[in-house]
Structure formats: structure tokens, C-alpha cells
Amino acid sequence: MHHTLAERAATEVSVEDAQSLPFRFSGRTDEYFRIWIVNLALTIVTLGVYSAWAKVRSERYFYGNTSVGGTPFEYLAEPLAILKGRAIAAVLLLAYVGSSQISPLLNLWVLALLALLFPWMLTRSLAFRARYSAWRSIRFGFDGRYGSAFKLYIWYPFLTIFTLYLLFPIVARQQAEWMANHHRYGGTPLRFQSDNSQFYAIYLLATVCAVGVGFMIAILMGWAMDLMRMLDAAGAESVLALVGGVAYLGMFAIGVYVRASVANLMWNGIEVGGCRFRSTISGWEMAWLFFTNTLAIICTLGLAYPWARIRVARYRAEHLYFVPMGDPDQFFADAAGNAPAFGSEAGDLFDVDISW
Image 1 (cartoon, rainbow, N blue to C red):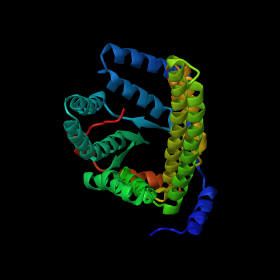
Image 2 (cartoon, helix red, strand yellow; image 1 turned 120 degrees about the vertical axis):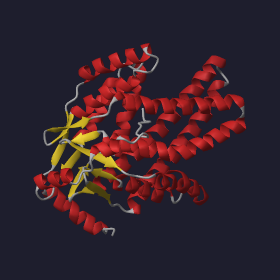
Image 3 (tube, rainbow, N blue to C red; image 1 turned 90 degrees about the vertical axis):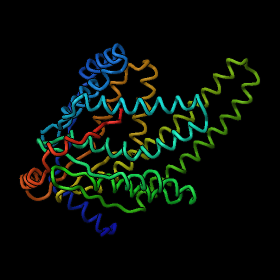
Image 4 (cartoon, helix red, strand yellow; image 1 turned 30 degrees about the vertical axis):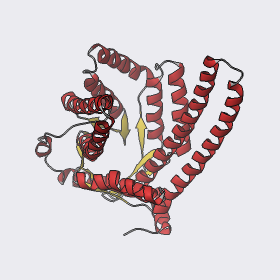
């Protein structure tokens, strides 16, 4: 049953009154830089094979430096499982690129095959990440299935084309609901509630901003066309690259805003065992963070990447709180007591991580 906005507001007031446990991130740029530079060198030397081990080292650093109530998270995955997922991803990428060199029709078939495989890759990656993540020695879990993922990530978005994407915010809410409701902490399932209007507000603002960026690009193109008549070929290409860069950064910022705002809604709408989360992440602050990070990475030829990643992790942690209700010890006891046996899940041969 969906709560009304007034009921949600009342709930949020009671949540504020409870004792919140803030997330903390204690990672440092100099520490992560040493991990990153070694990972990068070994990945290049081994032609990418070491990237699975590199990911495990990086994830363990970030998990281990993120804590709630003084207890850090744990990343428990082994590199070989990640290497298996990356081998699958590499084969699919080669099939797509190779087919484009052979025949446009074949390339279209491969693209259709990838669309059919995407829900499988999504569910397996989410299951992998959840299964090998733990807090207070209690693992997370994810039991989403291919059929529902196909409907929500392929079929419904395709149908929204015929509504001029007017129904896409509803699909986005259903995707968030599916993703949250199929996660569990130990044996305690997560529950997610939100209103369609909250998603419409995000996408409406993003659409208005996208129109504004398009208008600005049109003005810049008019100015660029006049300028290009007075320049040589190299100068004209530079002007076009500048306009293209402005367009990319504008749309990139809007994309980050949407992603951060939806994540904010998800955290604030999740309930697990009577406990909740409180997220104060700002979509525009996150967009500015990514914008300045991108500029720094470009200007330093990539060397600022560790600083940028630490910066994002710290911002997210500083704006997220866990709000326990009732007896926290009973909550952890219930989560641990109802947790499925890990051994029975670890035998899944399709347990892969496709993400990079």
C-alpha cells in the first residue's frame, strides 16, 4: 500500500527524531593513488588480465574505508569470478565490433542479441555485488529474475517511445522498486516506496535543462559558423570540438543530476527490518562534483582520477545516514538468523560480474 505524502512527511519527522548513524569514509587520496598506479601498471603489463585483481584491491579499499556506526563494510569477491565476467564481456564486445566490420545486418542481429542478454547480465552483476558485500559479517543478497528485468529494462522502455517518453518516469520508478525490493540484508528483505510524482519532478526538470542546453548549443553553433568562415580548416575543427565539448558536458551534468536524484529517492524510500535511510545528496552538487572531476582528470592526463574517486566517495558518505528503529541488536540478530546458507548460493556457475 502506498503512503500519502502527508504520511511520508510524518514518517520522516519520526525518522529525524531517531538516532541516526552517519556513514563515514576515511579513504585518502595518497593511499588510493598508490593502489591505483600499481593496478594500472600491472593491468597494462598483463594486457588487461590483472584488471580483475585490480578491481578487488580497489573495492576492498573503498569498502574497508566506508563504515556505519564504526563498522566497515567488507568486499569478499575473488578475482577469478570477476575475470570470468570480463572474459564474457570481452567476447560480446568483440562480437559486436567484428560484426560491424562484416555486415550491417549481422551487426543488427548481434545488437538484438546483446539487448536480450542485457537483463541477464544486469541480474547476475547485481547478484554478484550483493553476494560478496557484507556488513557486520552479514552478507547482502539479490534474487531478481531475467523475466522481470527484461520487462523493466528492455520492453517497457521500448513501449515508452510510443508515448513520446511521457511514461518513462513511471518505468524509472518501477525499475528502482524492482532493484530495491529484490535485495536483502542477510535474510531481511528490503522494501521500497515512492510516488510517481517524485520521479516526474526529476525528469521534468532534466528535460527543461536539456532544452536549455540545446538552445545554448544552437546559439554557439551560429557563432561558430560565423567564426569558421574566417579560420582555416584546423581552426574550424577546434571551434567545432569546443562546441561539441560544451554540449557533452551539459548533457553529462544533466545525466549525473538524474542519476544522483533517483539514487536519493531510492535511499530515502528504502526500509529494511523497520529501519530506514536518510540521504541528503543533491543532484546538482553531484553534477558539479563530476563536472569538476572530469576537468581535473583531463587537465592532469588522468592522474587526478584517484583524487576524483575519493572525492565522490566522501561526498556520498557524508550525505547518507542509517536510521535504526527499535532494538538494533534484534535487527542484526533477525538479519543473521534468516540469512540463507552462503554455500548453496556460491555454487551458481553463472555467478559473474560484468561491471567495470
